[in-house]
Amino acid sequence: MLTRIAIAAVLAASATAHAERVVAIAPLSTLGTEDTSAGTRKLTAEIEAAVAALPATKVVRAAQVADAIKRARKPQLRACEGDASCLAELATLVGAQIVISGEVGGLGESRVVYLAATENGKELRSTTLAVGGNDDGGASGAAVRLLDPDGYRGTLRFAIDVAGATVYVNGSKVAPTPRGELALPVGAQAVRVTHPEYHDFVRFIDVEFGKTTDVAVGMQQYPIVEHDLQGKPINRDRIEYVDPPLWRRWYVVGPAAVGLAIITGFAVAYATHHFPSDNCRKVGGESC
Image 1 (cartoon, one colour):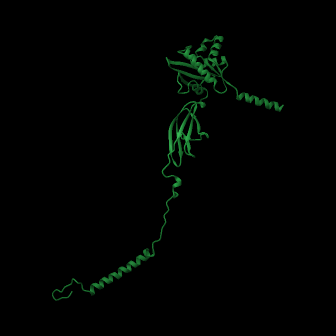
Image 2: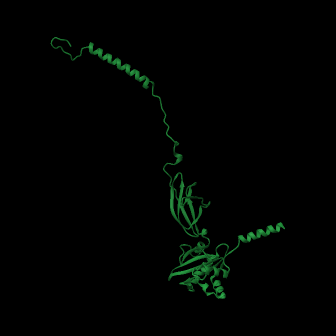
Image 3: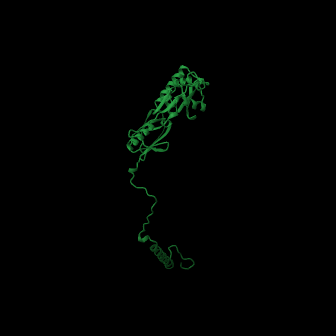
């Protein structure tokens, strides 16, 4: 009995883990009415394919939604225009948890679709999709932004010409794979590659959705690197006092200088009084 219960629990957990979310694509509208033009039908098909490509996601296509609305005789659901109660009723009608609705704006080829994902009558996220554009990933990028925003990423592939370098993105240390690849959110990223013996490599790099961008990192070495230095830095200066020779020490020089000065003074006085100067001459019969 316990074995059967355990097996049932595992199967239930597995079913929950692999349960599909059901996403309905509401008919796109223009100026409050359903847009049935060829261009809009093509765009709707692209959105449906992009949503269906997401993991564990089942799509109720716009044509199926339109048929359900027709059978239920509720034409007001064909253009909810973002109304929460209308979208909640539409989700219940087709058995979906999430409804993606959209409004087409613009003229000619310069058209933009304003998309929103609603769950239980509350808007989850919104985004825009440029018709004919692919800079932001097109329909695939829009589907990911609406339903799986953490997956809206691209990849940088680093080729660094020195070993032991450290990579920072937006100030945070990161670790590329052994192949040098790093998945990052779409948009401009501040990249810094640093090494103690080389100048930093600093760049702003655009990350594109679903694409891999190669980044060649050429590091420039400092003229003198750490292992070339002969001395080791110390935290504080050290002063060494060296004693002078004996004859220059104060307790020797001081008394000796005084004695010498006294002797010199006596010698000068004696010479002055006992030895006449060569410049002295007799004046008035007196001697010098």
